[in-house]
Image (cartoon, rainbow, N blue to C red; front, top):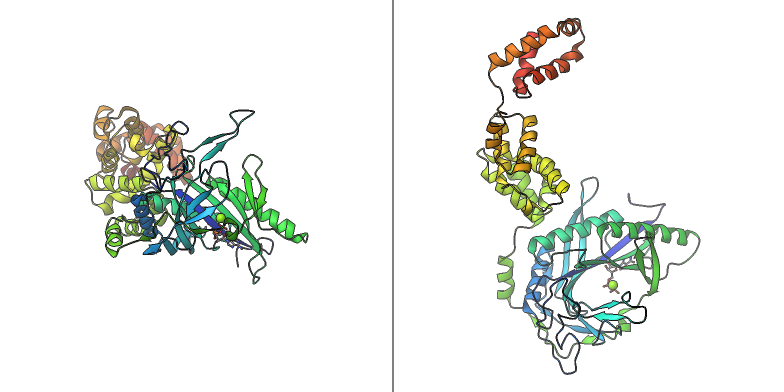
Length: 485
Ligand code: ADP
Ligand code: MG
């Protein structure tokens, strides 16, 4: 085991709650929009008025099935809803409808990449569908607490991994990968800031070869960075406890991101504590082969296959492919740019990947913009790269053109003309400029010829300066070599 920490093996399993992208709640027609005024998206059913009955949102079921394809899972043709009973002020019915015994998806997996580039399979036990609860608000009044039921009944998928991860890094990679997949399939927007993806992290430690230790569950983590921090803290805490002879008790803890530590919340309930039973108001969900096949046909290319295709088709490196496929919008943009280059993909794609990952991403970062918000058509990147490939401009001048393009929204070709940036390719022009540079620097030429060859860079710099940066770099190099013999 290469993952041991002070002789201990870390065991991590994650329960990820992802809000299903669908217009209405799981069992009512109330909308699921984010940011509406409190209690404006609450039907009688969501408020648990007596006699109200659930009506299943079939689209939420379809979305869960597609997510099941996304994680290579088994789609169960019969699944069933159970009531999970507990009291909480933001849960007016006194129970949450979930799937315990017969979840809709079982036995999936996804592949993550480790630091050394190797791959690891993380198995996924199940995806089940359940309702979200409302929200208690304690900080609006010194005397009262409030309840907002807008989230009550919002459809969630709970995606439960096997305890297959053995470091905080693996856990973070897993969540990132899952998020990429769900975003590709558009079954959850996985917006962590809005609470649309929340993680309960289970962690225990053991000596290699021993059975599983007692697990601690860290609830409701809403950022990947916090997930890493919480798991690192908890690993350390459990090791210190065990090494001083304490037992780890099975409990639920909270991560306090300000203090950077986990704190005990309550001892952990077992399933039996919730008195689960089949919901008598809901029929089992029975899926026809036809429905499953229809959904299968709507599946987009998934990140792993896209990556493989990018490497093969565009001959780009694995690390570039990793960056480009992480977000489907970026992957699509890359392909659009490659398609609009006048050169073949094998001539232009590598350079386009460089420009996207380098200058273009730096620009997006600097301006805090999304790829759709840039002021120039992305095809201009192809135009710019074409100008480099056909040697109209050098790579260095292209950076100036890119900056101007970002600033003005003008096309690279028109900027090159307007600013007089066309590369000088005329050998005789370059030669005469260089001859002058050499005669102006005769002392250095002498030193060079007597063995101080590191001066070559100096001559390149002076020549380029004299050519206003527009000399074809290859020609400048060659002519200098020729003249300096
Ligand atoms: P519960 O809802 O009670 O937390 P679940 O079955 O939904 O139970 O989730 C259990 C999670 O805990 C799974 O992700 C599983 O991989 C993980 N897990 C189980 N045993 C251990 C363990 N000993 N150490 C770490 N994680 C564990
Ligand atoms: Mg749990």
